[in-house]
Image 1 (tube, rainbow, N blue to C red):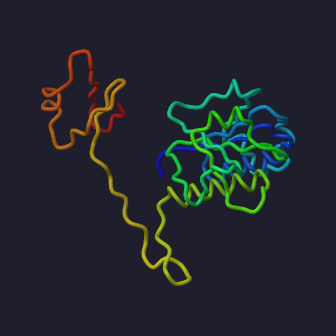
Image 2: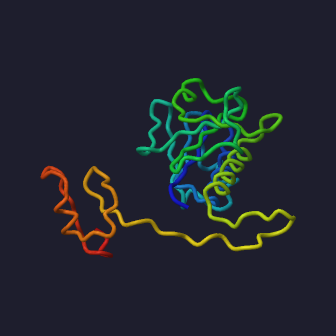
Image 3: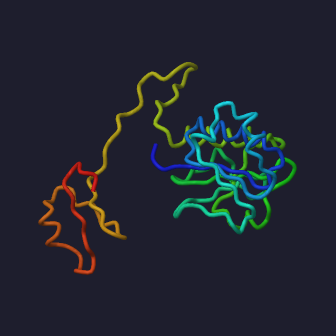
Length: 210
């Protein structure tokens, strides 16, 4: 599965809930977890994080929303019961995303909602626990973006394995730019058709990691 994701909570009041959420995030393969404001205690969080996720998944605490920083091109996705929220089963997950939940006894702040690229909701009759809500969203991401065999029409397991992975064409990248694939051309031919002299191309030998 390409891309990455993170998950966090704004205005946390019960660190043990975060511990449970972050344990699930570790299990689902999160790249990092975060908290914004609220009450944070790593000691209390460890009481419910029986997998010791803190030693495997980086945790970032931001004292306030103004300090919140995310990687470039990482979409911020709020999870909140709002009238115009997109229902989770109909949501297309971004390749790179940071999901954020509100506090246990409240909602995402209007300031954080304004910063979100998307707002989604879990179609339930009422709010569920923070850790439960986060786990549902992470599971839906796994189903949507993972490579699994299709469900059969009749009850039971899949009748055929998932399709084989198909590799894309080779792409030679340059500093700061992303030219089209030149697969099928020799490197020398590609350089002849190249960009202006102020666009340096770094060409390394296949497999040398450059």
